[in-house]
Image 1 (spheres, rainbow over the protein chains, first blue to last red):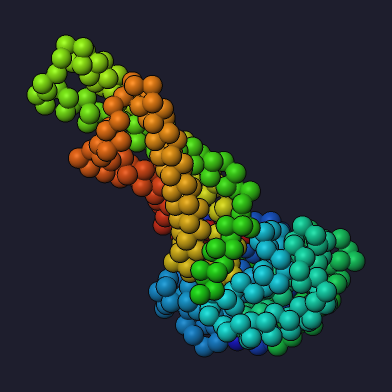
Image 2 (tube, rainbow over the protein chains, first blue to last red):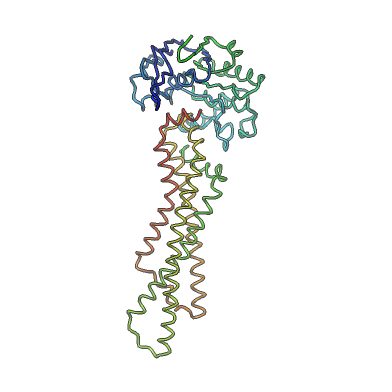
Length: 218
Length: 210
């Protein structure tokens, strides 16, 4: 479960302080798909960075699965992020010199999973995103939608409790967007998914829809 | 184990990125090997010939003096060129490796995003760079040495240098300095990588990645 209490984030610039998040309070139960909408500059990315343990709030409390994130050191936050949080980006961010299989296997290998378990997990997630037949393909040999499904598979292979997706359909056409959303819902079942989007139509898939305007949730 | 396997596989995967750095190190090492192998015995021979007393005829003394003079010119010229090669090579390698590592920061960002630690990323890239650079350095130095010995043998054949010159190994100082300089150049890309990774906060970098 995610619980935010009066989260504030202020950046200091040469021209003074800029308050990006202004008292965000929020509770998200487990296994929920949350969609966050808002204009550019409304604080969506900052909120995502705080939720994904990439950034710390200036004030307020953040609990992830009852762990008080606001009291942790940077190293503890990094360790927790590696264990519990995965990301899906708008630009896919697959490693171009590795096949789809190798891209997905990478995080497992670096956490010392045995070869047999790595193979089993990679095969499972590839099947769940419907791309088992593309395992040996390089990203350049895949369409945009397929690359994003591989990126989703890579994010899910570590079985995170929280998946942060920052405009995962931003670079895709309408029909591919539908496929990606179905993949996210199907493969990400049992995870808490926090998704940023500009596409109002996608709110139909969400359990919770949040609108952020000038650092405040509406 | 996976880390090492992945690092070694990366050499092949990233072969296009080494198109400039690899030949550059190879050429620098080759030239260093050539000039070091020529400079050290030639300088030692010309230095010794002055200090050792010989009981020679005038003709023999003239021939020895001519060889000594030729060896001195060769030794000094080779040393100078070798210094220039190391200097220019160091600058070029630092520049090219900076470009290459800069290009690979995107990959580093992905590594962070999927949960690798800074240490894992550094070791992966270190193993890859070290293997490539060491292989290029050893190949270059070996080839250079073979070329230089072949050149010296040719000079001996035409009586411009004495046959015993190949037995001059130097006192070790000049060669040690050359090896230290060569290893220093080899370490430049690795140092550049370490500095880049250390100066980048992982979380900040991942934020930028998006």
